[in-house]
Length: 152
Image (tube, rainbow, N blue to C red; front, side, top):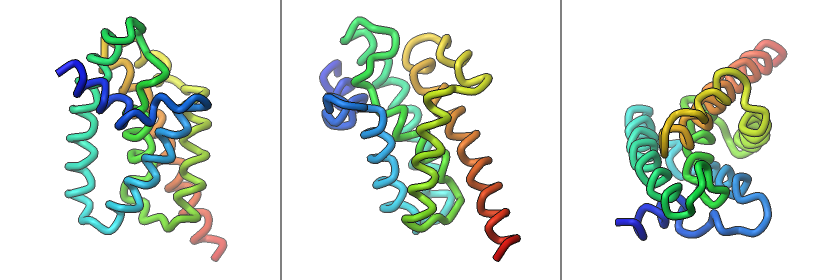
């Protein structure tokens, strides 16, 4: 189970990418979004829910394996956070790229209470801050879409 947890937490090993593995995780999140964006919203929510629950477990396993509270190789949290950013936005590739950059900025600066969520124990703390950054990202995307519709 340890091996499976690490495999999931590193998203099949993509978390071992030598430069900016979190950015790689967000890019994978964009790919997953584009694959699932035509699904009914309830299926997208279910996919995100399963990814979150499995991700929390896997991130906890990986933290023990790597002997670090929030190992850089763990990127399942970025995948989940990116999906939250784009949930129910109905973005094409261009807007999804905007969401990618917005999420990366929010994941790095971790506005309140995202930074506090990192203090939660184990895998929950690893994943929760990215989910919160994703919530802020989703709000930002909605505001952007609203503004674009008002101008257009």
